[in-house]
Image (tube, rainbow, N blue to C red):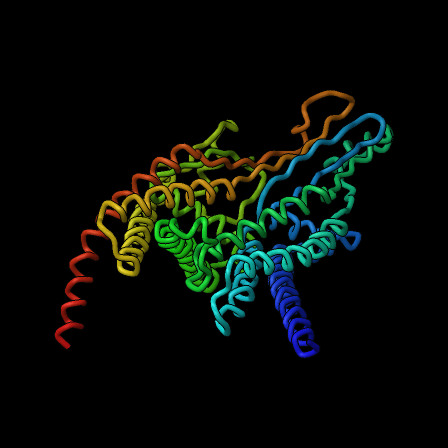
Length: 423
């Protein structure tokens, strides 16, 4: 009995140690990525020691949490601000580190059953809660801002107008969405990993679900890797290295998945004031600065007006989807029509999810004595995906690419079998 108890106790300690290692790896990767990105963006020079709070707010946003912006301007003025953006480079760094740590125990033992998978998920979730609480409670700070200098500052002093803008994390929302982020990630690991069988009630869907999940995840990650290569080339060959590094460390998947969706026929809508600089490719920034402050449409046509090389986005996207479809068909053989039905819905869902994650909304402004709108001394940045368009093009591309891959991969698989049989 003592030996059984000791064995069980040792197994429990090892299981909790594995969970702690997974959470620690994710947090370390996110902190390192966010800190380097913010430092490259110049956040190290923020006044009043604001860098730790800004770093915490970046971590909160990376797991889907809410950072509320607050402001005040004394007795005769008011400020307003909104911010909604996900630094996907930070999110992806944490996700990859967490997944690598979760998969490591699977390689050194038998395939886990449903009960063991659920137990691992619970242990990681329990340790993930304090990892969410620390940045959520730390992400709060207030900045003093000027009215523009000269006469405006003198009027502000006379009227007791002292504009301030600050931020704080919504702790409850951050913990809730952070746990949802973890749940989605864990489900994707179970669906994609080879050595994690689905629970018995869902096992009959395993052959239908696992191939397209692996294909679209490979497509999205491959496009981020392609964007990294392009970014590193830009970093080494053009000016503004700090700006480029900040973009790579904070928003690489944002730009990569926007390029993928645009290349497949999707579109985004938005606008950016002329006074606000954007660390994005020239063509994208030019399209978003629509004359007259109107809403601009980001698609292949609008990008092509500023850069003749926009057609490369379509070519790269087509090749990437074709490659993902062929690899899926080769690894998981099936009739061509089944390959089409596998990839079509999966790619549509992936594009909608990626488009939703690239949404940006930011605004800051000041109203003095109730005159003028809150954009009088501020500006707005907005970028919203056209989700129905992404859904439709993703479904069409997935159906076509899946069918063609099934037609091509089938004869190749049979020829390989004949060679193996002859040998």
